[in-house]
Length: 227
Image (cartoon, rainbow, N blue to C red; front, side, top):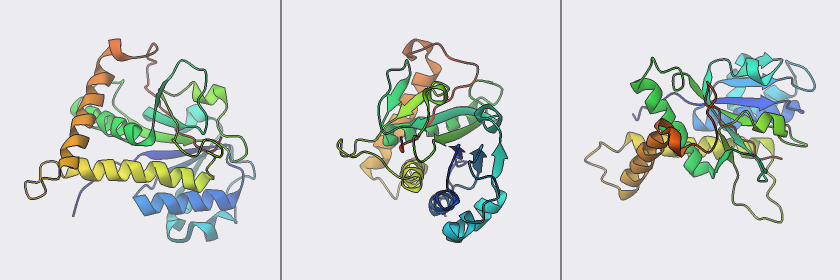
């Protein structure tokens, strides 16, 4: 059985409908993610509408943690990735979901390799905004990476569960391919290509001259596709 690295945290900022939170939990379960954190859910928590929509992800709903602020929810996070349906005029790196997944893996590898390095030790998280408006600029600027998806430009908006599934799937596939890189019985060229990019992005994180803006004490990258 393939052993994947520690899965990212999913942070939902100001989620609105319990049904959407439940659907997001189901998407997480599909891809092997389990740590769900809610920041100021509009209708309070627990929400009875969430559990039926979670289906096989019901334990994720039962174990979800609620926080008053994004800073509180990200207390153990050293890399957050934020997704948006639109690009922002902000001084922040940008990436598509596939590149962002590789950057998350590279950060995770760096955390394991240098556990005493405070800038890289800690969890990886994906941040998603509320259904109606997505993340606001104050939330986006906390991130190191803004993720946008090359969808139909006339209608790029995804619902919350779709956004979570898309990002979680890209992480899972990148992690799976990277885990196979040492398997001589599976010399798939895609594995080696992905492994190259993981190490390339790891080098970027370690090289301050490659950064587009001054680095905070904790590296945060946030994903939210539904705004």
